[in-house]
Image 1 (spheres, rainbow, N blue to C red):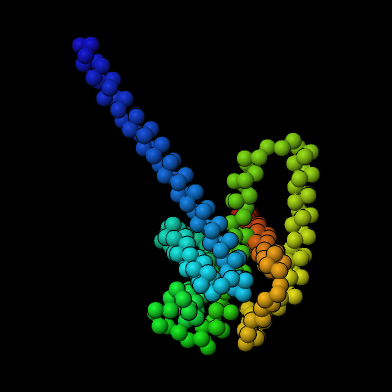
Image 2: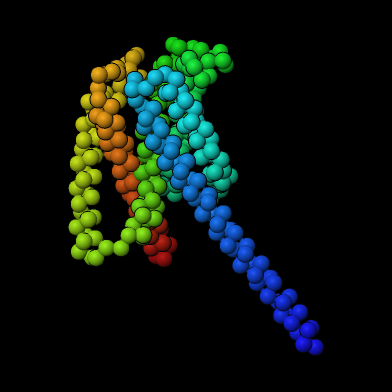
Length: 265
């Protein structure tokens, strides 16, 4: 009788441990996937920022970096396959519509950048024999700047989640937290104003709308200044995306509350 009771207890506890093991495995897998996502996204952002400075690298190095970005782009989309699966499911709020539109435009711009890169390749993809310098040059100029800006906007739409994941790990006294918040806001405002100046001084509007045939590159420009300008432009667009999403969410909540009031009446 004693042995049978022990066996029954063992049988009862086995499913419990199996569930616990399954939960631990799922948590570990989710954590690993999260780290991979962050690494892929951060790598893609940094590499694309470097790629904006074509004139600062040898052509071979530029093409290798470009190939790395393309690989990361496809990995990023593979990791987010559920987004494509749910594209035609659920309600489209203003916020979701903005994000979906940005994502689709970003994918289009990146694919155009890849196509243009294949046409212009002189080293890495030269063996494909897809050379078309005339079309490739114009497409590359337009597609890269659109990809750069849309990538930053995409990051801005997700910045609130990133911000929360960072701030929840940092605990500050109330007074210091307020001072820190306003300090970073002041710094952000200064960076955004400089980003607006850099955007205008570099005539990016001409590239966006193909108002120029050639992209002017200053080969004597210090690399630090070039990347500082483009980082500031990116931060400007990220900030715009962050607040645009906030406005869209607020507008959606306001519309929802008004519809509830009217239905009660």
